[in-house]
Amino acid sequence: MWKRLDEKLKKGDIILSHNGTEHTADSLDKLLTNIENKGLKVVTVSELIYKEGYTIDGNGTQCTVGDASILCKLHN
Image (tube, rainbow, N blue to C red):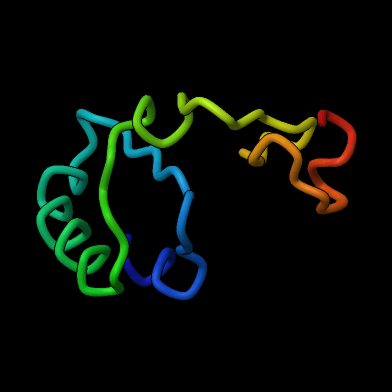
């Protein structure tokens, strides 16, 4: 699992893991350790998305209110 995520993983990403699969439980500890070793923090979805002063654009990108980037212009 980590080999598929290592190069792609960045701040704000959400990782969906299915419970009940053969390798999910076995790989979880290594996955969390590697995420933290990359300097990233593991949080709940609620902590990641629900914040005052933010909006979600049409692509599902979380943007600060007033963000001037192309991705966020449509919703601010």
